[in-house]
Amino acid sequence: MTGQSSRRRDHAAPKSGRLAPGAVVTDDGVALRVWAPDRARVRVALERGGEFDLAPARQGYFAGRIPARAGDLYWLRLDDDEKPYPDPASRSQPQGPHGPSQIVDPRAYRWRDGAWPGASIEGQVIYEMHVGTFTPEGSWASAAGKLPLLREVGVTLIEMMPVNGFPGAFGWGYDGVNLFAPSHLYGEPDDLRRFVDEAHALGIGVILDVVYNHLGPDGNYLARFARSYFTDRYENDWGEAINFDGEGREGVRDFFVANAAYWIEEFHFDGLRLDATQSIHDASDEHVLAEIARAARKAAGARSIVIVAENEPQDTRLVRPSASGGYGLDGLWNDDLHHSAMVALTGRNEAYYEDHMGAPQEFVSAAKYGYLFQGQRYAHQAQRRGTPGLDLAPAALVNFVQNHDQIANSASGLRFHQLASPGRARAMTAYMLLAPGTPMLFQGQEFFASTPFFYFADHKSDLASGVRKGRVEFLAQFPSIQDPAVVARLPAPDDASTRDACRLDWRERETHAAAVALHRDLLALRRSDPCFAAQAKGGLDGSVLAREAFVLRWFGGAQGDRLLIVNFGRDIVRGSFPEPLLAPPEGRGWRLLWSSEDPAYGGAGTPAVESEDGWRIPGHAAAVLTCADA
Image (cartoon, rainbow, N blue to C red; front, top):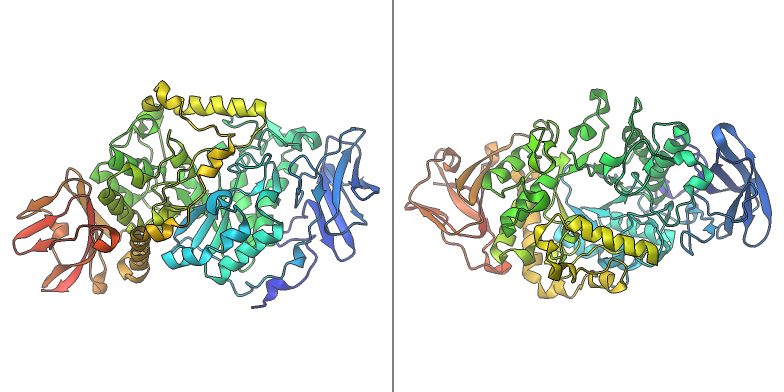
């Protein structure tokens, strides 16, 4: 369909209200704007010939119009530097971060999503995707061909790992240096637009993972334009910290805030996932994250968007409204639930898992309250962790059993279903997909992919050796990985075969049809059943039934109640339970609605869970019970 979003207009004044940095195609040429307060002169050099001075403007900017057109390659020359540089806000780097920038006209793409309303956090099923390994081809075009399969299983919102330009032939994208330029490795900028457009046509939203806590070490030319982009006042695990609150901060904030708005407006993304926000340091009166959120929503216009953050200290202020002193984001990744799940599935709680026992009460508490650590002492860090969040809406916590980091933070890169018994893996899947938080799957999880996911980055030889060393040092916190035999087998991040091993084998979607059915049926139950779909605060309670078993009860009022019984241990056969949550509503009983032991999922069948003789709860299984007439 054709809507308002397809009309041609001048993008020099975006919806965010900020003048766009970089080269912007208008009806009478190309407007170019660069922040270079450390420089006295900035010139534009076209590859096809011709140099043009930009005029000094306010607050360290240089701006002007040049006789260029879409597709032209250009460089920026600073003062008398012999070496030219790519544009910091380049929309395209077809030869990579060290090559010339390319002018792109976003108006040339004809959008078909004019009626698309956007997305909100409630009711979403997120799917984390790395474009380079999602398909064998590793392109946006090939990824778009798989979108109907994601819709079929019940995915509603794709979270795309970073796609801004980075050096080398492969990588995760978190060492990006061209924040405005979609990586040439995955296709043309319009291929990304087309991916988003096709997702919207199928009813799927797309949010983009962005990295505003550091830039990569190779191809980062920002300091050539303004040293004040960076600061040494804060520590950063990945390089120099970004200067959001020191001298020169105005131009820095403008750059990153404009970038957030750019992805929303010019590529129609339905929001952002903000990487490692604990390393975005800002002592300003208004934190830059709040400013980013406000600008992104303004850029979306009438569309609603979703902004999710990764925050290791579990600071709930990020998802509180600005009127209450919060940053106004929508969701937070819930590492606590992941850690408890992996301990329950594997029995291992070394390194950063040490504070989690994988005990039933952890899963009851996570379903009711989200984070498990909300300000109490955290032994692994020998300090308190988290902030109060008992009042948060369930949808604000993004729950997962695997993501890109957690799979890769091991020696083997194995998926959770490969580390646990099949029954436990199915039971954990049921818990995560039915619990009231916002579930997130990692690519291939819906068919229990056998492909690993390793850390990979195609750095130059000197950087590559440092990355290899750093990777070994990071994983050394796991005593099991300190074994020399294990260290010797760690895959080299800079080896292309490491990346290749991570590419999904889509033939497994057919051979692992039982896993697809498991996810599809659970997500259909989540959508269609009023108790599970509600995501209501205070809508459920839970209790521990045994050493490895627990029950959650949803209170559905006139719709009736639901029980989810999860047993990670052996069979439980008991004549009674002194637990009121197991009592059916007056005059009614319980009947089986769904079981992870259904043969369609590879299970062994499910006996009557409740009868006049008592309870029989199968081991390594999950079951959903619904009200039935007595």
